[in-house]
Length: 219
Image 1 (cartoon, rainbow, N blue to C red):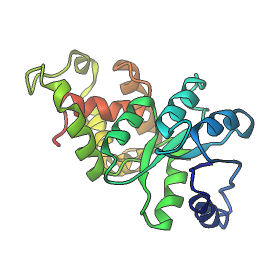
Image 2: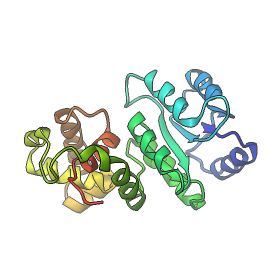
Image 3: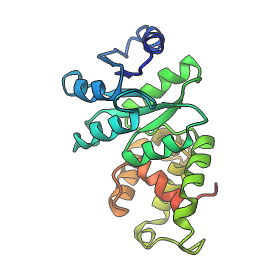
Image 4: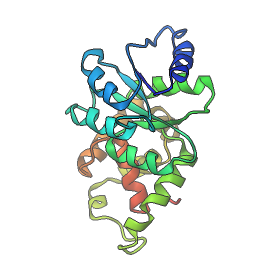
């Protein structure tokens, strides 16, 4: 589903995506309110969501859409379309449950890859941008705790789960983590599930934010 208030932008995305045999455009919306109203009938797997739109912006729409989806596994995955100048939007979107973000000026092949990655259940995080965004906007929240002090929840993780969490925070997919640790992808998926359960986190995006909030990885 394409959500952008500029018709030419939506048309451009449609042209890029419709040539892919495994991707179909099931709906479009010109603002957040229209997107919220359209999702139940369209049932998109992935939503490309612009941020700055009239009536209801992309963040408000993302929050409304994901709140209506109790099952994070089967509900739509939201990818925020952004620019480097919108760091604050990216961070808020991740907290709301978006599956990641994509720069509007990214190459066409990146857009196609992004949709496939998110549809498969992975997070879409550019490591360099992620470090800057989350590092900047969690600085104030970690100021109240001693740097280097591990959060209590970390004690429940095994050494391997801790290792997987750090790789998650670098924006790596399950496949990339599996290759890094020379393990099966199914095994990594189990580790990720255990991490989310033990840390009481909703999804892998929240795991990334958790890692940065607690200085488990360097900015």
